[in-house]
Image (cartoon, rainbow, N blue to C red):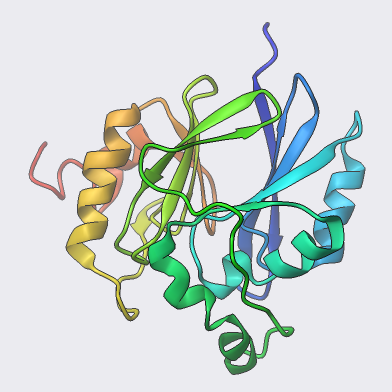
Length: 223
């Protein structure tokens, strides 16, 4: 069996048990953290556990909520890694990380400016592996999703979950935008796509289309 172009390990972090993904290119062993929300020692231990040895080369961010990017500034500074994402519309959230970390009793978090803001249609690279960027607003205005066409794999942050969807009761959230992002941006990628959500177990787009009570085909009147 051919080796997959990318591999990934989920590392739950913060009291919110956010799914940080350690993603790497199996050809080069170059790696990235996707949404390192906290627990830096735990994340670095996950890197050290992998064999062969991985080389971290960047940080990818889906959106600006604390549990997804609270450790970005610290890791980027410590390891001198570039940061890519999210979309610039989430600067509103990133600028408040210090305040939100105090309010939620998290370790102090710092705001950051990505080396590259992302927009719909962009591409990011980890080693030789390429991921397309899909702007999926609704949960936050600048939320992005990362998708590997070759691996049939996506990291969707808090847009979609197994059996649920992202909250839209935050400032600048929009419920209809979220529904449109899922049904018009994610479903066309294919039912066979496996996705890692921001919290909870993995699923596939096909499984969610068949059974998700919020955006499944039956719920959207498409059954």
